[in-house]
Image 1 (tube, rainbow, N blue to C red):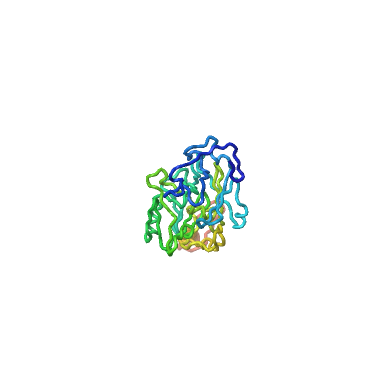
Image 2 (image 1 turned 90 degrees about the horizontal axis):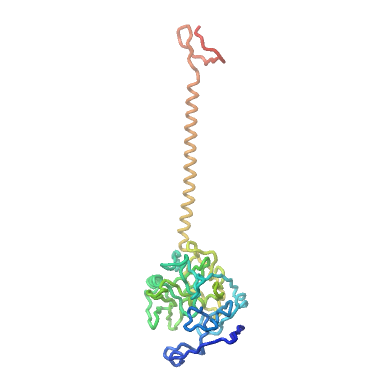
Length: 365
């Protein structure tokens, strides 16, 4: 068996059959012109593991690029490498996030913060492992899947004017002019951004589908994120087997480095220009907008500066008072030592300067 530049001799494969494999089925497993499924998941997910191992055991890494528009030309899977021309042409930089576990089932990385619109960044789940929220990178999931608690809050705040459409899975259908925030996801120490246009699917007739869903509240993965096609069509991704996932992005535009929950760049409520066509990013002059909560930071800085000034002023006042007290004490002692009275024989007191012998004592004459 050979795929691309990877050849595996005497590899054993299985053949699937059933009603859903038939292209004429009401719910076909294969859609479009697809003739089969090429799995790159780990062995623990295989229903019938191959005696010769999974195909992923024969590659060191692979990369995947998805076009922004459905059924558009240009999507590809590259085994054992990345497309250097794509990276150079679009001025992309790589950011690598280690897998969370050495016991691998999914391509799971850790999300440490989520920022919706101009809100303060928050921890993106109610329960975590190893200090972050489990986030499964999965090209087989079409949308962006949120933990139910995060999803419910998002729907309440932003999708109240939309219509819930349920057909096997629930999605919201909205008017095209709906205002939606930018979403910021922090993995490790890097933050990636999705604008409104990145997670909206145009259905025509001024109607859009919001490409977010909720995990099942009763499933084992109820508190897990699934980073599906909605995210992966924006960020070219490389999968390093058993080690990490690398996302490629435009620095200071679609991603920023060094960002943590307390210092995330701001979000905007504008969508990214989709007039670029099917290119990965195209030109984006939006950059990073100013934070709406920047006033809070400015207020805190001013409070600190004011506190320092008050402290210095207090020290100066205390110092001045101390000096005044010392001067008064010295002046009081000086007055007591001047012009003492000396008794004389002519019967009256006459003021004279004090005469102090070096030794001996005063004598009355």
